View 1 (cartoon, one colour):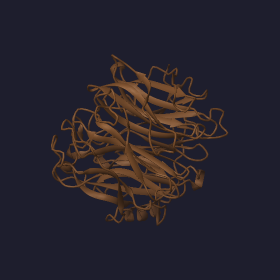
View 2 (cartoon, rainbow, N blue to C red):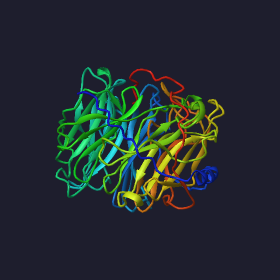
View 3 (tube, rainbow, N blue to C red):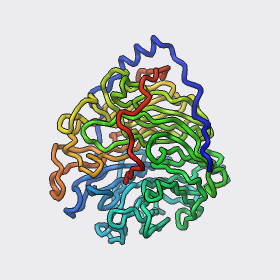
View 4 (cartoon, rainbow, N blue to C red):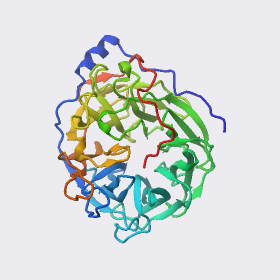
Length: 490
């Protein structure tokens, strides 16, 4: 299908320049003042992957229940020994944990796949099913897409259902969402996205109408994508923001017929990305969420507002229909001359709110100084929130850190906390992130690594002085490290 270019652009949020300068000068992440609690810890002992390590979380909340999923026991050349999960049924106050069954040789019971990766979580209220979708590997090739279902509120998960499999292609970067809107004509449908790397990161979409028991392939444009995150609006329209296959731009695809077919791509923005220092594995993959009225929020790391593309901000575009929307704005974590680098965002939106009172929570990793090396980079987690749909933001808070990169598992694409992280809302925002201790993580030494999943004890609230989003000037138009062709990201 011919690519369309209805840009998410035109209406920046107004602000008084003097007020912006004053408030942004104040918006510096303070010392870590958030207590975090451990959600899970790697139990495996195979020496072929890094233990104890947990990376790359996704979460989903519905009512007072939050379920998260993450890789456990990261391999250097892709994927993990298994996928773990953590669950709270009381709004984040207490948590239980477990690991998916029947996935790999290391799971209980063992499964047929070599490794598993790229977990994503959603909930289908029509069928009362929680679903964790994962990418399963044969050797080091993405060969299957799996749906692990829970019919008891996320207290345990059943053996996985195979959504798609291949003997010759290379699947990558899975994501799932379900239609939770009772008034939608497609209420209870679930939608899964991934790409086929061997076919140029070709977009693939599947759908289920029976709680994830059976799946049908959708008709999609022959587009190259990576890292799509489908969302469902209250009328049942599916909007999927995503990176293009080479991570050079953000675009979207839309389905109005319950996922039978998709139109697009619709252009959102080009990506101007700073290469993060220290050999950390990160790229400008999007994080996307939706509010209670169906407004779409998309964020990613981008250096267009920093002189010489010297470091990344987290930037945002919004839309009400997936085909057009607002110009890209910079989220005011700090001043553009701060020297800080911000990356790997995880956006959460409180679906009980919408429009001008929508509550947003943004978690991200950052360096206090973008100019550092593997041995000197200080990796921390920040959080910033908005009480008014992204028009203004609270002062940034340091959630945890600093961490040494040498305490992270290494991969063939760099030291890893995850290609994405996640934030979900109940009464407060709950970011789930990878936290490590120490400065040694050695393959085969199962006691050297100390990386686990954590969240904020008691959650994080939207409160404090606000800095408005404003007319930041674009000063860089090209990434400082050209993208390679069609990267893989499992």
